[in-house]
Picture 1 (cartoon, rainbow, N blue to C red):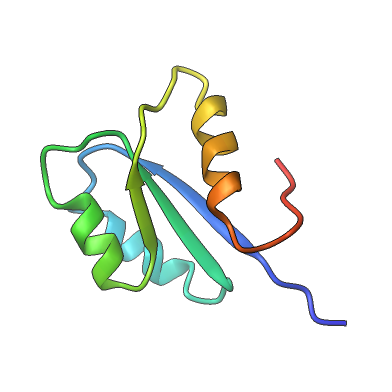
Picture 2 (cartoon, rainbow, N blue to C red; picture 1 turned 60 degrees about the horizontal axis):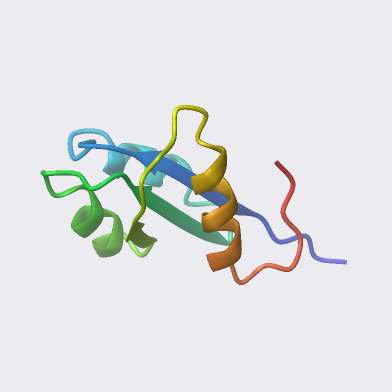
Length: 80
């Protein structure tokens, strides 16, 4: 049985770090970046590295965005 794993990254103005973050997750099957309406190039850098990226407001607890990101994943099972 093959186990597939997805990573969800919550980000805001992280252009300096998102590349390294995604590089460290190169081993997962799917990477999704939830971009909290950054004013820098966070989302475009994420897309250039093969991650899915979309804008959504990140709440104080991050929960709403995690749930929204989970809906975007191609994988059938998500553990929070």
